[in-house]
Amino acid sequence: MSTTSQKHRDFVGEPMGDKSVTSLSGIGEILGKKLEQQGFDKAYVVLGQFLLLKKDSEMFSEWLKDASGANSRQAGSCSQCLTEWCDAFL
Image 1 (tube, rainbow, N blue to C red):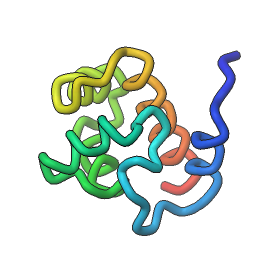
Image 2 (image 1 turned 180 degrees about the vertical axis):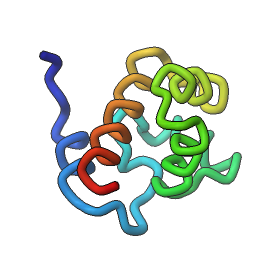
Image 3 (image 1 turned 45 degrees about the vertical axis):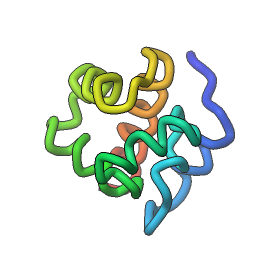
């Protein structure tokens, strides 16, 4: 079983609300700025992209790598975070 960061647990443990894109696990300040420049300024906007891709973790990870330059670990962390959030709140 993989371990998750405190950031991941904090995000998955409560409703998303108006959280910044950088509150997502795997998304730091640099990747956050790249996403913000493309209009993905809030976590719920990134969630929308995840849902448009039908919660397909592989497709989402590829999109995130293309959109922000994230590496595989960062994209996987963000994808897992959104998957678990959806399981808890949708």
